[in-house]
Image: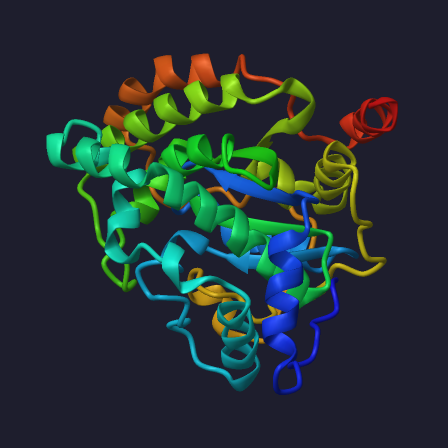
Length: 320
């Protein structure tokens, strides 16, 4: 896990910001793409406990909130205040950043105009933000679990970003059930709306995934990660050519994540290899019917993150 740099003395932040602006070295970024409720937070936390890797959380929320985290904690507040101090306020976008990310805005003429006008600033902010997070955390790699495939598409062309793309998939029955829960603060979806959301998200994700170089992309199945977290983490880090998996994964520190699901409200989370628990609820026949052709298509995407892939991914990384 990357060590968090301490706060700068008066005046040093300005010097560090200037140095950061002059530094041409790209920042290595692991972006977790896919549908919500697919296990991105626990995957991000696990990656953030690996040497040289920092889990930032859902950084799509950074521009609308002007870099102020919604979660409590003095360590979190200090960390993100220092990140803000390293950035040029002229590139901040505010709520307009959502037009680059929300799949539902693809058909909005107003969103298209906003994207044309602000695309350069959006990409510049993304590159600068990742560089500032890496500098503040002391990490060589930053994890962003924002989900949105359209954000991933922008990051593919953002200056100063060396992108490693993860397409995170989970059993659609489990995702639809989770999206339908009413006991969580997130928005609840009906069965038809949840299935439509999965279709749109996964179609866009497959398109973006196919545009990413093969040596810098992986399909990660949530169920595979739960069954063999170490093997999947090793495959991801080997693909990215950075970091090492810690010797112990049972207790993971969440760290000063900017925003993610309620899991990060605890300082420590437990991760133990386990097979997926069978659901006590009867599978939805409608979901099975609607998702069958899409799941068949997604099953053809490659490479898939498993322990056996780690050695070959490492060989590819070393040969570049």
